[in-house]
Image 1 (cartoon, rainbow, N blue to C red):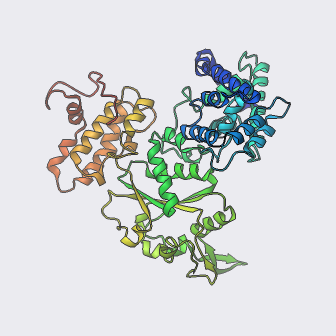
Image 2: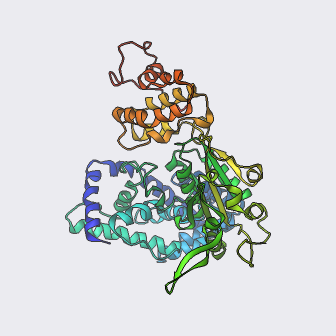
Image 3: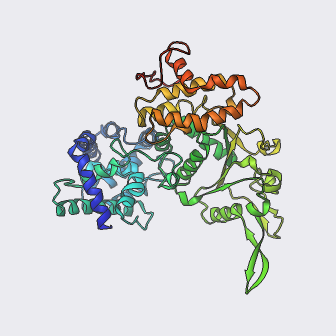
Length: 520
């Protein structure tokens, strides 16, 4: 790892340690370890209570779905589960990576919702061996700690090797802290607490959804983690996954500012297990079949101009998906209805529905089919009445998911984000709800993303409203100038605060006024 970045990381962490937040964040860990130790003793001794003790040891650090899957495995196949746990918890000198590999080889494919990242549940079980074997969360190590310290990511996908690589990283942090004269991190337990700090309660303020690299970080390992990161409800994400498993393609539709593209990229990366299996394209009026599927492109060869048959993003992703049949790949199509869909998609109208069938493409004599592990997520802005509508033939081939401020998963999103990132500014969510109530237009509602920005304060709210939201409302109410005054910022805030009618003494910021913390 790069000394400069690592040392800066450790120096900055000292403030977190000195504040007492590290100890506070880790205060429950010894109890978890002790519960798992009791479960281990019962498993190795054959105590009849071993199953209930394992259940007690599996605390909420496992996602509920994974925890339930493991407990169901124990209940339905207790002998198999007992043998696997004895392998993981054996009283010998077996290395942790070897333990993990031996255990996972005995775990059936249908056990554990985190199969894309099996290290999370198995590392928690490994805590039965003591605090020197801390839990592993991919997002914390790969997406934050390695990158911020200049430490290269592991060059392997093997779960056991990845865990041992993480342990070595923690040991290096402890060793360097001692060289710098710091008392802590004093051990792996401390160092792991610092790693989780970057994605836990003590983390710096998260980049806003429109950050250029926000969707390029290491994807989270489960829908539960993703729901927490997006501030969505898990049920909505599980429905999206079911829809993708059914038709292989969905479209997120809703007004601007509802996070459709951001959510599409995050969901795709989570389900694919890697952002490298996700490609983003954007449709527009000049986009054609030759751009998206396959066509002849100008080329210069030995000084002579000519044309070359080139694959577009669809064929590129299809080839990659075929090369990795056990992994899901995603093509995210932003603003899918801005293109001339019949012209852009061509034979795909057939292939999207009949994935087992082959067709010859327009520029090729070779038969082609869409692989089952290539999924498509499109986004569609419903507020722009000037763009082409999606025809019924295409609608039949896609599932549609609503992204509207009044419906899950977007409903209450702004309030949840404000409560977490801008306490005291929850009144903005009331103000947006009031404006949308007045608009009475679900397809043209004001989305929450306008205000999901770092450092949000009342001055920024004024600027956003005046230069983003107000022009958008005026466009929506074109031909109704008498209604524009209803959406004056100060007037709306007086209404949501239940203050005196217009003309009273209240002004924005004159006094702080909270709002109901409950989700609408």
